[in-house]
Amino acid sequence: MFDFKTPVKNDLPYIRKICENYGTMGCDFNTANIFIWRNKYKIKICIYCGFLVLAYFRNDKPWGYCFPVGEGDPTAILAEIFNDAKQRGVKAKFVMLTDAQKQKLVEITGYKYSFEELRGDEDYIYRNYDLTILPGQKYHSKRNHISKFNRTYPNWRFSLISKDNRLDALKVAEKWCRNKGIDPFTNDEYRAISETLDNYELLKMHGGLLYVDDEPVAMTMGCDINRRTFDVIFEKGLVEYDGVYSKINNEFAKTLVGFEFINREEDMGIESLRRSKLSYHPVVILKRYAGVRDDKA
Image (cartoon, rainbow, N blue to C red; front, side, top):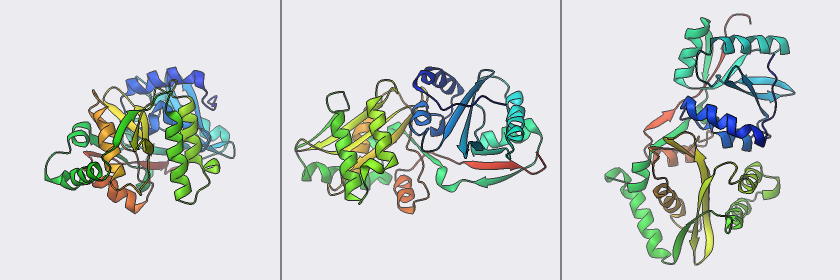
């Protein structure tokens, strides 16, 4: 049985090393995400034979296992996942599988599975060049939104998040919540943003703030998944400022020098968010699946 534990700060360097070497583009194995969302999603981890085994818990039992991440042959780790589930009295359900992981699971174990596509959990991944330059006719409307923002709010400025302005990022998040009738202090995302800002250096975050007349009107931050891919975890804007999201998206992309891809995460099954993400023309929509073995475990 795996010795699962809730991730703590001291685990982060080792988790980061494993995930970076694995090379995934998925946001579920972004080290910061594992830590930030550990309480909301009851994430627990185990380092086993050099692999990171991650599971989501409910009522002190794992309801979903992720595909093990590490270098080398995962055959023994997958066998141990089935053993772990059996000892805990649960079905071994795999979640957040990519197409490649789904294929590996079948090939390695030799079992038949019933798979379900996790429609709201797909990652939208873009070329950094596209979000920075906004080239061609397909980005014409985005360029227009930014031009209108610049004309309407000539006293705008963009700054990277630092220890001197972190409270401005939290101020945007709080106002965003209140504009939607949400109590920020009971909101999971607001609390995650607050904790992330408190551990900014430890989590190796990189973020930006957009100001109009020296008032913060949008914030964004994330961190690298690996050397090629940056993950935008949070982005909040005050929509009374027309074009605010197009503007901060573009300004922030310009700061991600050296990254080929930008992962802007999932749409959570929200149709308006899906349309917005598609309007930026992702080069990859990283599909996700859940799967359980057809035969008796």
